[in-house]
Image (cartoon, rainbow, N blue to C red; front, side, top):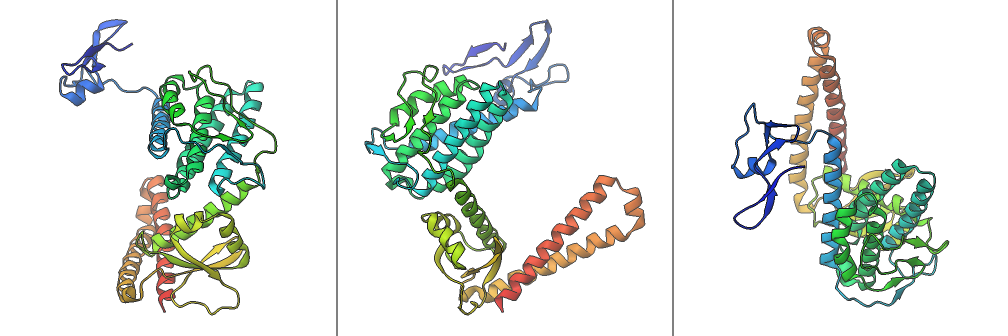
Length: 374
């Protein structure tokens, strides 16, 4: 157990120099001691560090939960009263992203309940980690950023999701969840029909969250994943063409893709920077459009380059192409040299082959973009 002391400013910190309980003569410098300059590490008195990377994983996860909660607290209007929100499958009024996260919440609770019933604590932890990090923090919070400030019902859903997360996480992370609990409880407003989250003064005594069967439509999970893949594909094209973040593009898509975009209720347009979605059937192929393959069909993205910037884009792409050709030539020469292949470390040769493959893919993408310019 580290020794703590109070700074002149009144803060409680780890003492700059710590001693091992089993050997008082063995001393080490705390992270605070090194950062503050109050103690200088030496060979005989090293910096105290984590002995397992699992500590870093846990710390990063706790930071993720903490920062996600801070984001939510800054977006939810305290004391908001939106009454009861109908999230029932097929007849609810919750937005697309909200329906998806609640369906994933119901799915996660079911998986966790089964895991705990079989004493599979590793499955409980893994399921919870994936849901909180990947779904809540990385996908849901990004999806609601453009709309949540002006949508009280969505604020209520976000509050309920965080409330559920803290209840589910409390058995394995009690200190962080208990510290966040009063702040999340203070901004909660409205109720979600079919999801039971009774209030509690402490997270430790709060009831386990439960979702009534059939209240959410789990089929929306697949729809959301498809929309998310489409957003990623459009973003990749924007990135490869150097499109400015605020520049909007036009999507030329077949009926099935247009239907998917419509189901997403604006999520694809907002997150992928799409201004307009038009039919790709029986229309002339737009000049300068870049194709992307999605679910076995071709989707065209136009408006990637302003007409006034076409020549500048050609110059940029030609410079990129020349650079990639030079890179490829260098990698191929190196791999054609028996002395390098036979004498260099195997992992270094493998890395060179990987770099060559990446450079070839980059060259093909740049040449395709140049061809699309006409």
